[in-house]
Length: 224
Image 1: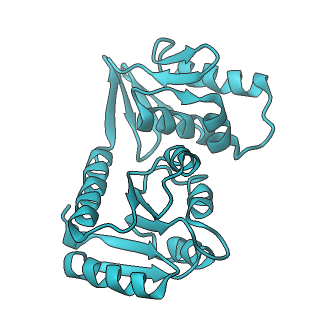
Image 2: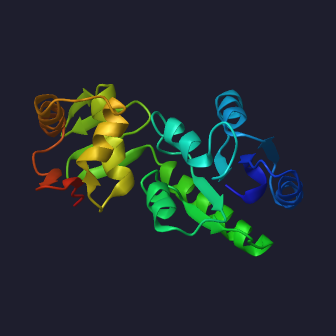
């Protein structure tokens, strides 16, 4: 995939900045959809299914991080560039937990923006392979959410697939218990039994050695 193939959703409430950045984007990419607030951004995300999200943090109605938090409940794959004038640690940490690809501090120049878009393309290129080798005799098809274990084909349920996708996306890093709860159960008050049962069921369909518990922190996936 190249820059010109992209469809980008760009959300920015400041009219002048939005026009300037849009003009730059339209020189390089196929389609730019613009939104002026967070509610609009969510509507256009669901309507147009863009390949890349370019979100300002400070927007009316819903800020960029609130928009992304809503999107990440069901979509962990779409690359996201966050733009802001804020450099405070709390903003950085909140953004990192929502799996952003790039964090651009305003003002940024054209080259910085294009570099960030190219990083998004790299992320997407890694996602295009449907069959992921997990270990010897074990592979995962992300398209139909199935596991091939030796010669046996096993289908994952929705929560199992979400957990495996989350761990793979963050490999080799640890995913915290809190992040798993948020992405799988959407911040519901999940019981320890339900949590352990989900991990146990996924290990049964994959391998007991694939998913490792880091005591007091969370889980990670060990790819051989």
